[in-house]
Amino acid sequence: MASELVLPQWGMEMQDGTIIKWLKKEGDAVEEGEPIVEIETAKLQTELESTASGILARIVAQEGEIVPIRGVLAVIAAPGEELSETASGAVASSAPAAELAEIPPDPPLQRAGDSNPATTEEPVRVQVVPAARRLAQQNGIDLTTVQGSGTRGRILIEDVERAINAPTTTPTTAPAPSTNGARVQVVPAARRLAGQNSIDLGKVHGSGPEGRILLRDVEHAIAGQGPGSGSGSGSGAASAGQVIELKGIRGTIAIRMLQSLQTMAQVTVTTEAIVSEAMTLRQGLSRHQTDGNLSPLHLVIKATARALKEHPRLNALQMEDNVQLVSQINIGVAVALDDGLITPVIEDADTKTLAELAHEGRELAAKTREGTAKPEDVTGGTFTITNLGAMEIDAFTPIINPPQVAILGVGRVVEKPVIADGEITKGSMMYLSLTFDHRIVDGAPAAEFLQSVKGYIEDPWWMVN
Image 1 (tube, rainbow, N blue to C red):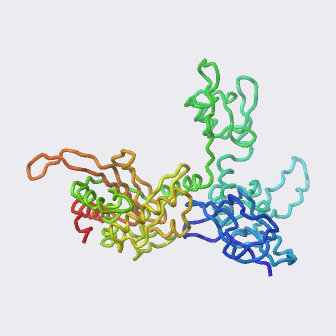
Image 2: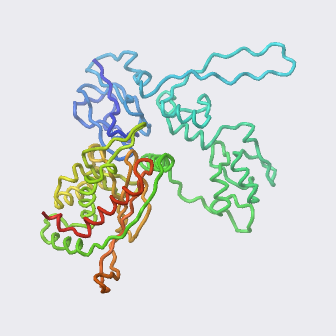
Image 3: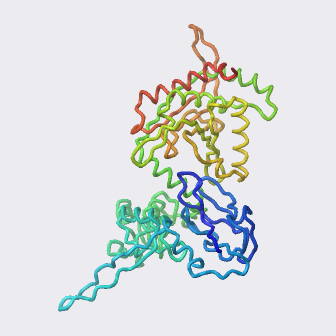
């Protein structure tokens, strides 16, 4: 009997995945547990294994397509088995990944003098994933005007986002006259901005559908970064340069960071820790490590894990209508990649020795950079640490990784004059920046947590007990 290969949900934050490459083609034999397709999610690129043995009878989701969780990717059948109509059209019935919606059309126009109104049309039926429907409703987007990029024209969330950024031509985006007689399409916000800055819209290159001028096109023209500057006597328009598409990991980061800032009351507090003793401890222990030196970050992870046990409200997840205090302390450590940022997770960080934290942290970072991290390596985090110390940054304002409620930023270690016992001495200093959601955590408990982390780093000898 034919079975469907569906996109699993790797972690509670995952919403969809992109088909990168099929490792098998239609008609190939596959074994249960055999890698069959490469998937890219917001957090990693990994291989999905076949859930059954048989023949890859039909590939439903094509390479480059974004598929919602539990969406059908392929159909696997027994050798010689005839696919039913249901199986061959699996995606059409893959609820709850998508749902059919009846969208009433706009009422027909009636000419002046017509005695009878035009006949009402039947509602238009479109396929749309729930998240895309919600986004469309929030932004007043008519789904019947949105071109779906999913299988069989299903409307995905990125289709609605494109519609928001590049609305269809209506009277509000009427052609705008230009000094050279050409007529261009321009969205209202771009028109207003151009008028305020004396920009000739006829000289602005529109990046929207059919060359429509968007707000960013006028902004580029004002900044002199595009071909739209109406003033100046340069020999030619500036090159647009490289275009980086916001898709895959980069696109997901863009969406999630914006959602994080728009939905949380984020506040950052900063303190400076004297880490001279910690650096002495690190140097001493590193001489006995067989798989690489300890870094200041490993000491921060150890101190943070202990502080989270004492301040459980910081080790929490924000749900739709409640906050879950999590007993397990799973610390994610951000790893920078060429095209984004991925946060592998050290589970049960509070139960591990400093050497174990260092070993696991290095191993996870290497797997992440090599692209071999598994879904379980990057999911389940309850608190995140991000480190810009290696980039010579002192302090910064990290953005919370939802649904977590806080994130700790780690700066560089730098030598400074320090006053101790009335004497000026040289000391190693490090900034720690905690961003927290003020809806969940008040300023005082957040500061107390940060002071706990600071105290454990400044007096670090407990780490070797």
